[in-house]
Length: 130
Image (cartoon, rainbow, N blue to C red):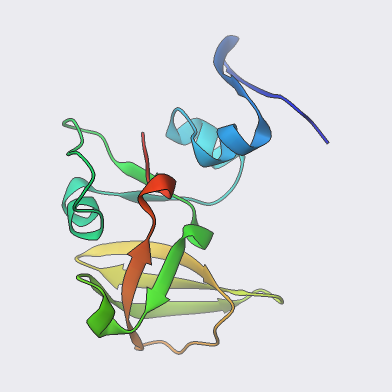
């Protein structure tokens, strides 16, 4: 296993850091995609889910890994979503949730059904600006 990850693109250094830092806090979507699935949350949805975070500059989004989004009781969240697709992956499920006009990929161990409604919850430390 590596103690350091160096990401290059077209001969240029993009990011240099620990595996955890590069995975959780990639500098751009290219780097995020190299290490796994991710969601880009637009400014409107990000503000509703994370009202205490400062607003993003124009053209910026928040990157969030599927395992960092939690599904909650709808009444416990300001943002509600509907399951639009469910994929069984052995130890977990990938579900796609439509929330506020945006489709988000969520990793969960819960067996869910298309059409189920949930609230969305996440920690601000995992919503990285890109």
